[in-house]
Amino acid sequence: MKVSRRTLLAAPALLAMPRALRAAETGLSPLETFLRIRCSPPETRTFWWYSGQMLARLTGEPARTMVSVIGVSHSQITRRPDGRIGYKLLEAGYYGHPDQRGVEAIADGPIANVLTGAPMTPEHYLSPQAIIFTPELAVLPDLPTLPPGLDYTGRITPPDIKAGRVWMAEELFVKAPPARSAPENGPRIANSLANFEAALDDVTSAAEFVPATMQYTTLNSFRPWMNMGTASGAIMMRLNAVKLPSFDAVPEDLRARILRDHPDFLA
Image (tube, rainbow, N blue to C red; front, side, top):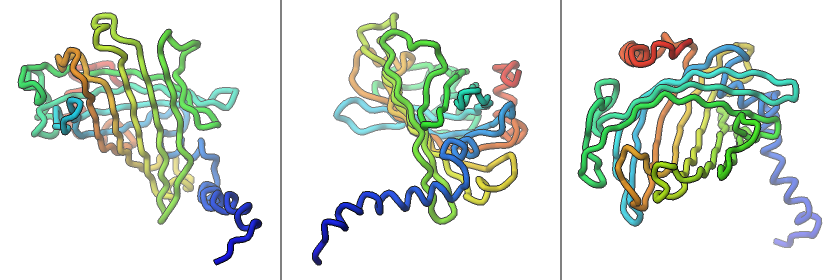
């Protein structure tokens, strides 16, 4: 088949057209579409309940399941005069025995490190996060200036719509200086990819709450509590999460554990 010069010149526009048309299907800007899926209206809390596994590998070796993971986060957004969105999150998470699931799997004492066989005591976490979403689909740390040596890149992918479903992702690529307590371990890497998905009908509805799911994966440096020293390798976390309208929708045993450990979690 003979391809004309006009066809070649028009090809980039033709390739871009389907994505532009798909993005327009929500009737919202890409950022507003993302906020509908990821969040709730300003000053309204959004809850995510998640579970999954953390895998670990030494360089040149296959990955093995190190711990199970379970937790809950809640967040709120604030609209700023410049069009940016302030986002604050608090997350309570737990690590557990790798071959168990649920609250009963939580490890409150030493368990075996699958890479070394040595005992390790997982450090459960209560993690705050403050970031900014921009109309240009950038994700920024909510700081006046970046700490010295911090390399932080974040972005939101444009909406991908097919078969009545909407997908968007939040990508973070972070490189921090070595920990002062263990400079020999080198820079700390924390890369993550959160894939969000919701029904197009829910995103375009008038309802305040939009049901959604999230698949979250990471590629990070070993954690200090793993006692890996200067070993070369990485940890990978894979989580499945569901967006909930309230904390009461979280399983009762997990709610009780979080409020026992963190009475001010909802404050």
